[in-house]
Structures are given as C-alpha cells and as structure tokens.
Image (cartoon, rainbow, N blue to C red; front, side, top):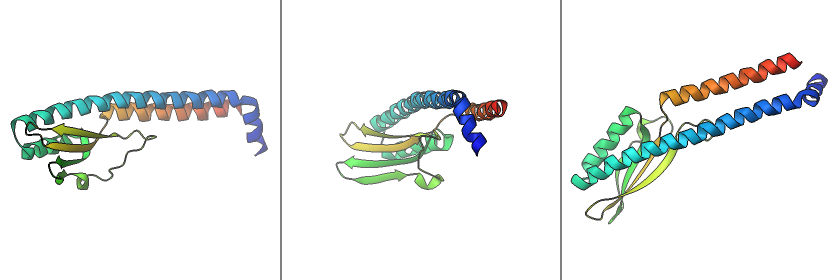
Length: 157
C-alpha cells in the first residue's frame, strides 16, 4: 500500500495526463455521437414528414418499424398529441433496454414533433443508435487507453 502511495506521489503527472487523455477522447466521441445522432434525426424526420404529407399514420408507423428493423433507431414511440392523445406505435418491447448512458455512449434520446397537413400533431420519441464502426472505434480507443495506463504504471513502478 505504501508503494502505491509513493508511486502516486512521484509519478502522478503521468497518470493524470493519461486520464486526461481518456476523458478528452470520451468527450470527442460524445461530440461525434451528437453529430451522428442529429443526422439520423434529420433523415428520419424528413422521411416521416413525407409520410404524413402524403398518407396517414399507418404508413408512418410502417416507416418507423423499418428504421427500427434496420438498426438506425430503437425504442420508438409515436403518439398523436393533437387533437386527441392517442398512442399509435410503441416498439419498446422489441429492445432489451430503452435507456441510454452518457459514459457508454450507447445512443441518444430524441423527441420530435411532427405536424401533418390536416393540423394533427404527432410526438415521435426514439433512441438514435450509433453505427457499428463508431462503437468499434470507441471501444478500441478505450482499450488502448487502459493498456497505456497499465503499461506506464508498470514502467514507473
């Protein structure tokens, strides 16, 4: 135990800089995830607005189910909020978890309101998922960071 305290006393700048680097990478990936999520939201919102303009909510529900099946979104819920509150679609049963975690960066929750030409308002809630390569790069950076922390701690002990 004394050796660990001595190590932190002598080489704390090394660990602090590595931990700072890991936190910076986490923040960078959070910003990238936010950009990816916004692109997914824009694509889904444009598609669903077209569905509302030219058809009814049955086609809207079919499009959302397709996005869910392709892996772009999960835990989608559509509710007609005006003129009456009417649930239209709830796909949360198709997913293991409908929670997101800021540390794990496993998706972002979004709420979008869509207005149809007949003045109906729909609330669309979903979680935008990350692409596979994003998740792979994120965990690769985390693994390399942990290995570097362990390697440098072994070098200086």
